[in-house]
Amino acid sequence: MANSSTKKSMKNTTKKKRNYFFFHFVKITGSPAALWMRPKVYSMGNTRPKDVKGGAMIVANHTSFFDPIFGFIVFWRRKMHCVASKDLYNTKFKNFFFTKVGCIQVDKNNFSMNCFHEVKEVLDDNKIVMIFPEGQLNLEQEEMLGFKSGAILMAHRANKPIIPMYIIKGKKWYNRWVAVMGDPIDVRALCGPIPTIASMEKASEFLRETENKLKNYYLQGEYEKK
Image (cartoon, rainbow, N blue to C red; front, side, top):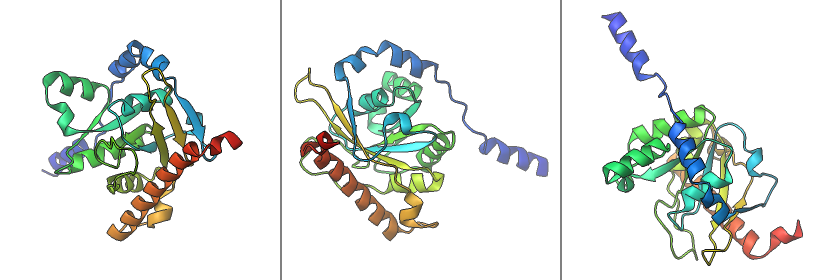
């Protein structure tokens, strides 16, 4: 009986084996998108995409359905997973596609620990996870919506840094998109070894303020002074 319980426990803690064949296939066949968006990347600090090593959580604003694609292009040389709303998995094809390209499903109305554990597993495996803490599309772009604290909690649990990135899409279809990056944020330095609701809310607001600083850094032309 004990052996059976041990085997069951080991089975539950076994890491999910990930196959990136379809991920690379889509990346290669979709490479024209990289030419279309032709991302310009600026850094408010010292961090560029090539400097992001190991597991990290990319946190960005969300103004377009193309934002995840843009993230994949910015971090072209890395294996990236993106947290995607359950609403996008509403057909068999979409469910197949989003699952195969490595998206991690989240139910915004009923958060499941499955998402939490899968994100942590990917971060522990030294991959990148992209998440949009506004929780929905913000088409106005004037002011960022309030940030949900899920990103803070998952990064804290995995003990991986958060890399803030602000996306500015082109006004016309032929305009290049822009990514403004900030330096890594140590979540445990913000929340302490054991996070509380208050500390996570404070960290979420700090992250939101950082995103706004990235936006202003670009809009005010500060990057031109570097």
